Image (cartoon, rainbow, N blue to C red; front, side):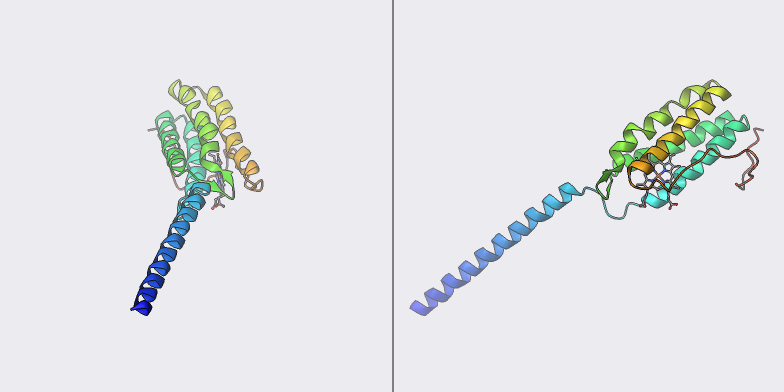
Length: 165
Ligand code: HEC
């Protein structure tokens, strides 16, 4: 009888111990998740590739005087930027999403006016700000070697006709 009681007590103690460990593990997991809210698997590189392409096509469309197409690419970039913000990315301790919300998104918003007014000079100056915001973040996030540039008019890089109809 005594041994049975002892075994039962030992079992209860072992179970309680297990539960405590489990609880601790969950707590640790939650803490780690709070410190690194980056959802694994967000394709930041591909998303950046897409931003680069849109930044290029945006410039080419505006240079060609195709303001509707340029406005379309600005909107695409803003949607892409919003997706990065929603993903709440922190990469190697650098707050990518919050930085992007404060830098790239205002730069994109500032392009709306010159695009709407078909203002080439205004566009050119705001476009410089846009590219500066890309590169400022690459520099600050430890990737100073990713330097985005204003396209050169002669480089016929894309398989797309930019002329307005
Ligand atoms: C708030 C921060 C931030 C902003 C703003 C930003 N980037 Fe990035 N970008 C990053 C980070 C971080 C990486 C590296 C991602 C990695 O290595 O996982 C990156 C990588 C890239 C890459 C390399 C991806 C590849 O696979 O070739 C390109 C191209 C790029 N960005 C273009 C742009 C362009 C164009 C803009 C502006 C329109 C921009 N980025 C704005 C943070 C930013």
